[in-house]
Length: 104
Image (cartoon, rainbow, N blue to C red):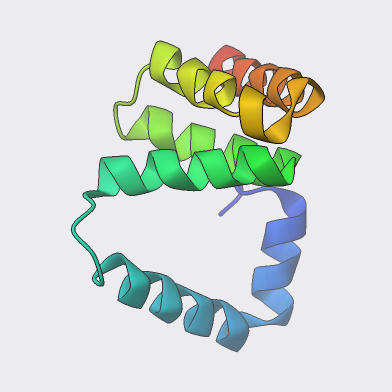
């Protein structure tokens, strides 16, 4: 648990029942369609990029690396956001992804 970001650790400590419900919801929606985990991870990363959520981009990028998704694939997700989310969002996401890659 020490490797989790401090805000998330605090959330877990304060609201464990909410996190259990969140995990149950996540597992339920995972089972509702044909996408495999790898594709779901890339979709979630793309959504995080579009939301310009530093924490979510880094979290999904970390998990993607752990699951064997390559650095080039992660960078491609960020680049794909350019026409929809815009240049600033894309550049920020690329930077956050690079931070994760440098950690590894």
